[in-house]
Length: 588
Image (tube, rainbow, N blue to C red; front, side, top):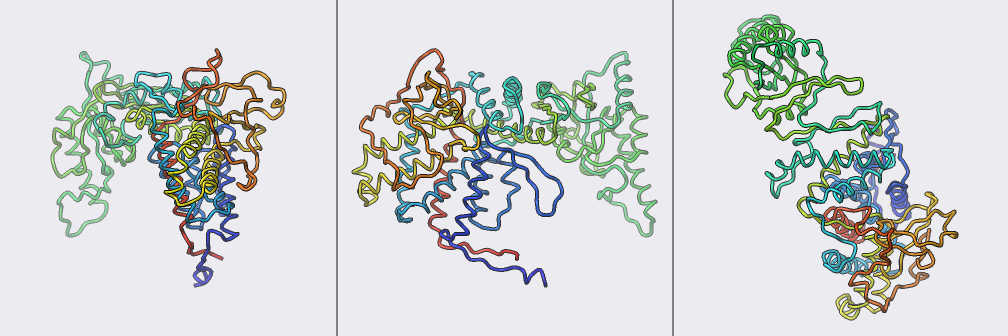
């Protein structure tokens, strides 16, 4: 009862000081985590226990548990973005929060702000889809360099992974290789999404350099009975006619006498020992049936009794138990069979699978059994790192890259990364508003000044979501006509006189031709509203074609992932702006 008395019903508004402060704290936390210059976060809880380090949105967002329902909704939307699209989770939360906080700072009516946000979002999405948008390109499926570039950009954007350029390039190539191995599964799903666990096993090895990462076809299972496996392999290889195909079965119930499979036996009076004995006798008969079918390997999801193991060994059958549900499903996919879930019925043909290659592989200080089936679609990606937290970050990030690859395969469009497409899009939107201001004023029933103010609030929130924090020691710039994004070390910003490529590498300009971005928020009342007379930017213009400017961007973002993030952020912000109260329970 005491704990129940501490629960209180809280009622908050968006305009409350406490709500605004909470949103600002969350915004600062997320903004300081984005990109390669973001800080590593140490995650813990009030109860103590294990501490985790991360810069990855999927791990960070899972750990945060705010009581405010608005913050929960924002974090949930960002987490769903990562789960579904593999990227732009932090950007989703950051843009939503910027639209909210900047909206609260402005003197613009919230109802008008919501209406203008929805209208500007439609213009924004039309601009992204437009063939005239200059920060977008098509990627050929055969363009390995571009696919690798996308993966490398995602890997280098997470400083906790601690990858050098060559390490990131290697892992990007490995990710592309395992994705190509898995292509038959992706093709068979057609319009349906597949999960990363289908056909790809990501294995982590700590204590060695990331340069030692590799991938292989088939499945790697860690061994705890090395000597037994070696003896069995020696017997198979010493035969006059070595076995080319090893028949397998997978049992997903216990083989230790404690199974839920009651075998249709009625016990009037019996001790536990006699019950176990009866079960083992029945399983022994089942194992003899396996031997008659020439089964060579038995995989068990749970435990195999030592007595059953001894019988299987006598029958020249290799027993591998304690697989667990995750590994069991992968073995099923590799061998192409169905599991045995009961010993009360005989083994059927579809419960017998096969592997055609078995070997032992040493990786680091561990030993693995390498199983392969030539006709199966299965690959193992072995990732290495010196520290456990780096390894966990790298494994989670690799899954996100594979999700992005799937979206890229279905819609092979990319945006110029590094923040360039966001600034380009903001300028593109300003130009469209300038061209269509009469129509938009009629639609929104507002003055030209109100429209420009709403547009500048929207564009500034988008640009702010990409800017680097001042603590990084970098100064940010953009170009007033074509957008794009530049960063320069503050110590050398006054000395830089030669043209400098933008973050994506496709545009180049001197700092004197660029506009310095403010480090702190500037009120719209004190901000110069952008009105451009020159509309040539709508056709797409690049600053230079000098030797140091690349035809392809150095950094790329998956179009589908980031377009969805943009749409989700604006709709989430509008939903919050239209909410009058947040009612929730809190503990005091």
